[in-house]
Image (cartoon, rainbow, N blue to C red; front, side, top):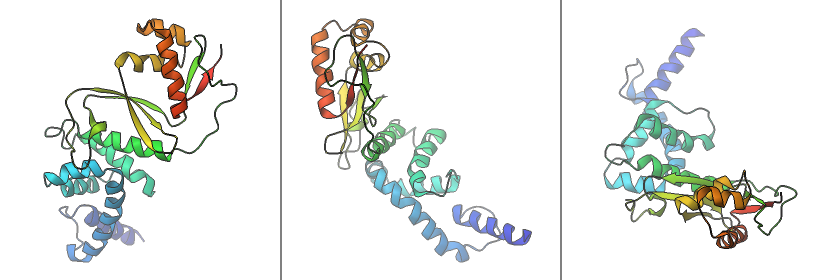
Length: 235
């Protein structure tokens, strides 16, 4: 039994790292490595089409997949964990960062859009109102997330995978048709949306230095209509 386990580990090592040192001939593991690699690459290509386009343009996509595969960093055998593990690998290793400083942010934006779209439907919390008032607190939609990037990676496309210069403050949310969306915010507006989840809208506006309360209420009303905000909790 120990011999079988040792053979299985050597075989897995050969599949995951063809350049590594094992007693298993490469020819014996080639077909299995091809299947394993295909199983890993499929969800990566599905979740990260822009990242793939960027790296393929430079002839580096296969290298990235091979590096991820060789790192053996999958936390579980589940298909759903492959794309998050790839993102974690990019962050942890800094692979490609010197040439593409925005690479990990681009991959994060892509997976975030997918996660927002696939977020399970949830009923809104009880006691919320649809109309914002100065004394109410903000409750974001269950799929909504506030993020900030040093590069405008949310505007990248398969045909134009290089980001435009400049940082981006964003609200990621699921639209009325279930699609993932990014809304560009000013830093002050993003700070308001963060603060207004814990303090009243009026207090949050004062804290972040936004004096036009009426304009804020109009914005929040529009965000609720779009599905980014679940509602407002009265004081």
